[in-house]
Amino acid sequence: MNIVHLKYAVEVEKTRSITQAAENLFIAQPNLSRAIKELEDSLGMTIFKRTSKGISITPRGEEFLFHAKKILSQIEEVESMYKVGSNDNGKFSISVPRASYIGAAFTEFTKKIDKTKKFELLYKETNGIKTINNIMQADYKLGILRYPSELEEHYKNVLHEKDLSYSKIFEFSYVIATSKDSPLASYETITKEDLSHFTEIAHSDPFVPAMPMAEARNAEISDYTDKKIFVFERASQFDILSNSTDTFMWVSPMPKRMMDKYGLIQIKSDLKQKIYHDTLIYRRGYTFSDLDKMFIEEIENSKNNIILT
Image 1 (cartoon, rainbow, N blue to C red):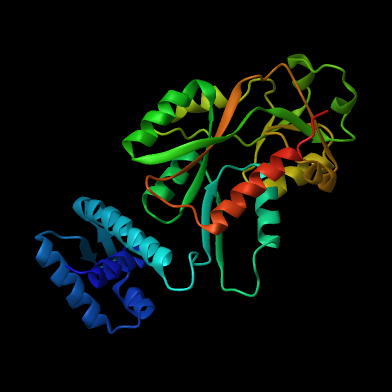
Image 2 (image 1 turned 180 degrees about the vertical axis):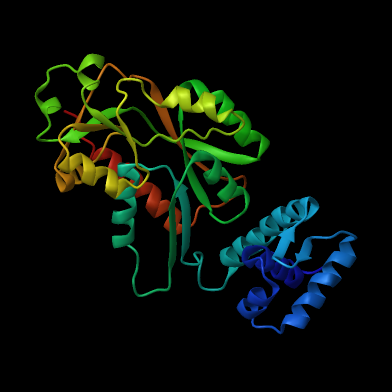
């Protein structure tokens, strides 16, 4: 087994096709097939099953590929750290929850990138399970998890089991976002009865590691109204809110620039005072790059631009 064989196997897993993997790797298909066979023989196991429908991965193969990607990622990190003339390889990757202040931070981050140098930025909005998996599979260097404070020990245990480091970056309660022309904008206080007449744009993430989906969903979806629209793309959420004055959405506090852009306001409410944590996660032993540090600084700047009514 050698590093080249590991790279070959990971590419086959990615494409689920020997033909496509060979094309991506710029090698002949027979040579790739032979290399994969040599790798499997050296390990005494089958990684890939060849079927009429393509390539599938065996359970032991999935375990092997998980470790292979970690090894390749660590090699890449070492190479980037000690490459002559540079301590940063121009790559940045992060998985995050759907949050306006994080999105605003990423926008400012992209504006400050040195455009005279090569760079590659990956920004993925997804749920907590996929964020953890993205880090574990070495597809992303950083992740941000969002969870209610009462699940903090649960998440700490999950992160400890997966050998991931973490640090809290934001603690908050959800606020109500609605159009500045919404009737809710004039209410001195907002009651559960008030919200029952409006439509909720639901955006919560019901996926909690090692917790039944039904239990997680019940904990996160509000019962203030029986009129709900589930939309998981932020621009569409905000477009509905700004154009439909009978809608509202529970959100993490938003920067003023984002509210002004979509003609929204955000309102504090005693109805939903549960505390949430946004926590930065990364593989244990990972060293932050200059780009990582720049993005984290923009997160702090974005938080400072949050203004609540």
